[in-house]
Image 1 (cartoon, rainbow, N blue to C red):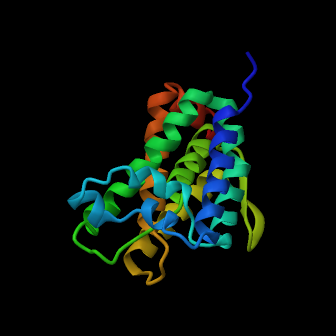
Image 2 (image 1 turned 90 degrees about the horizontal axis):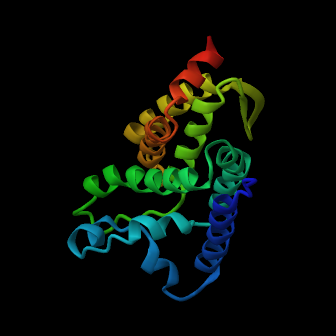
Length: 200
């Protein structure tokens, strides 16, 4: 049966709809679903690990994440199948938030939202399975070989997590990317062979 990218379409549209409700709603809708490590640890609100991935801080945050999802997720699902894609996406989302939860478990003021960790997992799974691809970014629209882009991305996320003072959860990007790599190796047994054959 032809792969219809059902998982990608479902995640894509549900994320957009839920995020828009959260951005424009004046109720406590978004507040109930954000990642609040203090509540996750002390009040056992584990669902926040998942629901936070369907919420975004503003339209720019949503648009940037959904553009990245659009360019890589649908292709990846075609490559690995809907079930594997579904597992990789949500496992990357969970894993990407673990370090944030541990680090901020007693910080009542800390909150975060966004699908960035899961999308980083998707991106790096794609890089592992299609290393001959070239990846461009908005402000540098020249295609960079996927493996080089991956190394630069990981280095930046690691540096930013240690030094940056913005409100972006760079740790989630970093751990989501690593999760995408390891999960792909588990879900696609010949992933490493595909990568090495393509690179060398």
